[in-house]
Each structure stands twice: as structure tokens, then as C-alpha cells.
Length: 98
Image 1 (cartoon, helix red, strand yellow):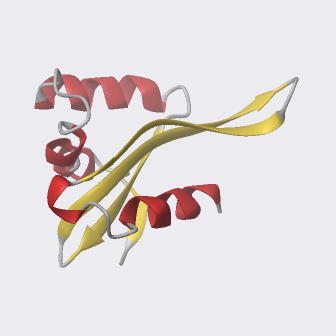
Image 2 (cartoon, helix red, strand yellow; image 1 turned 90 degrees about the vertical axis):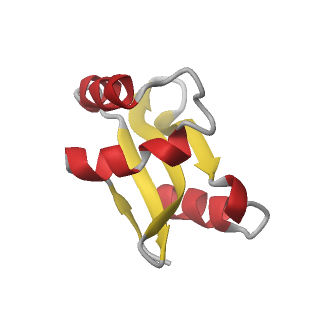
Image 3 (tube, helix red, strand yellow; image 1 turned 120 degrees about the vertical axis):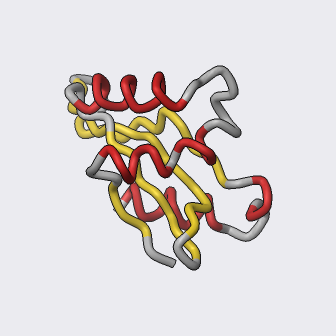
């Protein structure tokens, strides 16, 4: 199952339907705008696809902290409701860690 970073606004917009399942107050416009602002602070969106459909999304950032050194912080992690309990979220987290 392909996993990659959403680099373009098109890929970020494609993530919206899955992300909205976690962040129900978001509009598509607010999501794209917020991701663009957060990307300036190191935020990235990783997505997992199955047959061209996005099935899971993780929003995360890697930062350096005095007390812990290099640190991965996962802001958002959601698997599409129709694909839950299949290990997709776990696979996505493993990919982000690597």
C-alpha cells in the first residue's frame, strides 16, 4: 500500500475527506489553509492509498527538543471508517517513524 507525503495542494485537498472524520469542524478551505500555514512550521501530511483511494492520513512534525532530542509529534492520525481495524493506521505510524 503506497504511503507518501502530500506535497501539493491537490494531494492535501485529497486528504480532506478522511481528515474530516477526525476533525469534524473543518471545512475543506480551512483545512488547506491551515496545512499551508503549519507546513511553514514543519508540519507534514502523510497519506496511505489503496487502489487510488486515500484510506489513512497522519499529520505530524519532527522537532528538536532540549529534553528529548529529535522528537516526532503526531498531531492527527485517522483511518477512514470503512478501512479501520485492518492495521492501516499502525502501518502509517511505522512509516512516519522510519
